[in-house]
Image 1 (cartoon, rainbow, N blue to C red):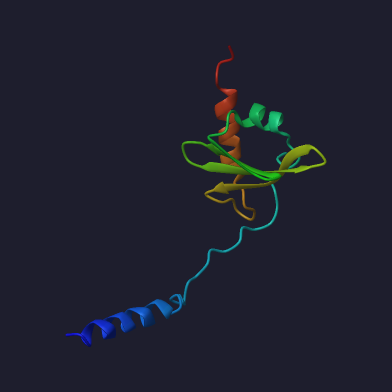
Image 2 (tube, rainbow, N blue to C red; image 1 turned 90 degrees about the horizontal axis):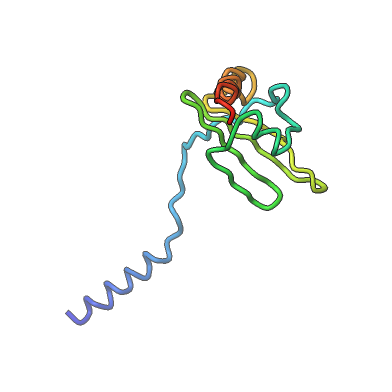
Length: 121
């Protein structure tokens, strides 16, 4: 029994030295197609709120921000970057994606229409 305990400890130490498992045959998602819908890049924060309302989610990470707007059938992600104190949209994506570019114009139109149909106080 005494020789059994050191053997188990030795096997435990050897197991701890094993490297991480290597995952193979993993298919990464394709990068979104390049291009932005007209009228979306260059929008400032205030313009974005006027056009799309209050974002459902905002993440700030250094000079970058992600604003997400949720609709009944889609979500839009606006990527804003600050340069020289000027924060503006540089990239837009939607889920589901558009045809030929990362953002679906129908989704963006539906999100804007939702804001336009709200009564003003």
